[in-house]
Image (tube, rainbow, N blue to C red; front, side):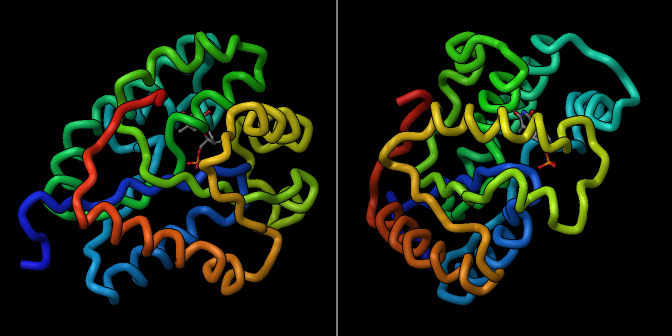
Length: 212
Ligand code: FDM
């Protein structure tokens, strides 16, 4: 067993606008970590497989209407319902690559005009990531990539507001990735810090909670 007593996996979060490439990069990171002896699993939010996730999915597909505050709280609840599973995976030595997390929750709701502090409150006490990677791409460039899939938020004007909200949210600890480059070059920018992070967590460092 590669996981010594006290060691744990790393919680790595990928954030960015729609079509920034998070999903393909998540898959590549998992593969790379596995190859190098760091067991890794993918989580993504919203997790559309739960009852709450199905409500969110129906809202995103415009099959249902929900008040902005209501859907914000559903997104947060959808993270809370995965918290204990995430914690036990991390404690058992598995690194988690998470495609969107609480920062998406705040950025997308703040882009609609909701108060940032109000948006942050329901996620207080979720596991804090060990590393946040922000896949930086201009809203214009993202919108040109293979077209948006037609979900509720996939519109250029809205994505511009989301980008502004992410600017307000991000702090010096985030690693900013130039996501306008090729898939290989983007991975190259990310993999070093992800591996360092997995290594540090394996050497024993305790989990903390949002919003620290
Ligand atoms: N989104 C995602 C939110 O508005 N709040 C959240 O808390 C999360 C996790 O849902 F447009 C938005 C971001 C995106 C949409 O995400 C669905 P995916 O990555 O396309 O499944």
